[in-house]
Image (cartoon, rainbow, N blue to C red; front, top):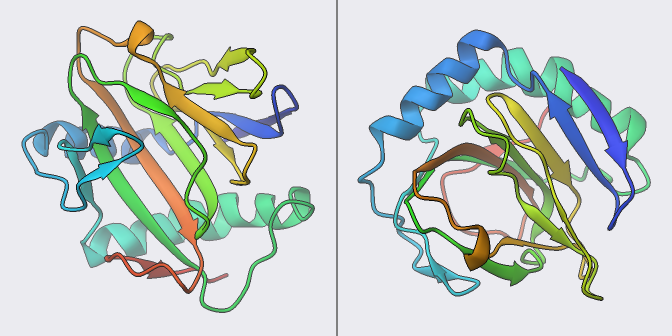
Length: 195
């Protein structure tokens, strides 16, 4: 995994070869297999998330912990991102397999206060499916996408992001979303952050 930091419009990091090739393929298969799954938590930021499902399998949790979070992602964050994130007891992670349907859009928004890390790995082949980042003053950056590329940031009130109606796609948009949340987050399933 290659990680690069960027500062416009605010600090965020992009990733190439974010997951192992085998894991990326399995995640893509999970996204396409769950296109009809109803998202159980209603609307967020004006968008009904009807095509998202959460990692619920112990196998997935153990595999991702052993092959990605513990050896690669979490050590990088601990060493290079301490200004933005401090691990605390009770922190949890969760993973969504997403299949956002044709026409999907997401209003500009900050993340909920319980989120401490927001990470997305894109699993489509196109380069125009990345999240839009906003500076709050009219300037926008579209994060590049492509199979097994990704981005992450540490949510604050100014980290506005979304996927505007003007960018809506005529096809499904596949990705996995990893969030680290604090102990006050109550939606399940979640898994403990460990090293």
